[in-house]
Length: 318
Image 1 (cartoon, helix red, strand yellow):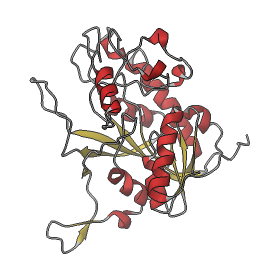
Image 2 (cartoon, one colour):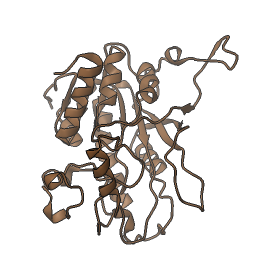
Image 3 (spheres, one colour):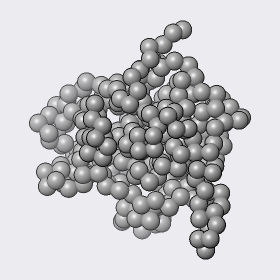
């Protein structure tokens, strides 16, 4: 079946699954993305009336809300949707293609309500022109019930759900090669007030491939040895500080985190795909490294943020 060729170096305002279905088979070199958290954030595809983040769901513009991923009633439903998306990514990747997938985890709440002050907090920070990229719950307003606050057959309140590995194994079972788990170590994690476990300071990046043999430029990401006198193969724990984005986007992964993903996974002038483009980090890094990009983003406000970043950093507003 012939597919429409989507314009390169453009972030398309559509849900990722619809956008991916327009791409031809075997047309993309590499995928780099961070997927929406499960049950932690409302990424804003339903617009808050009057800019107030605390109005009830009945007062919101429901356009596109059903297309947003991360608010499914169960982790199983969430994983199903993620696998559905990435099987389309599998189709559009070249046989030598790689996928670098950043995934964060979630805890099962069980308190009945969640995020009761998060909306107010984020709104006040936005009015003060401060960063709202925070790793706290950014979900809803007073009385909002998160997916993780519901009852589950076997996941108990306070359980770590295990979202990253659940998705990684589901993708492997669906046909992907699961090549590596990379630990993103955050030296500056968000403080946590919890007193019965350690503060979380890492996330996963999974390297998945379409074929047994694939493009991987290990020389492009060699790293210095401890004495600085020679180089070695890059190791699988990457220490990268989080970076706040002052504009209205809740989840931004830092540019430094994905530089080596693109260097190793995509040849120059190749195409990098990000089906959850958000504020445009993948686009910015791809162009800085002389690669092309294709992006999909459901929220038009995030596309405006991304285009401003491209214009500001690269003079490439389109």
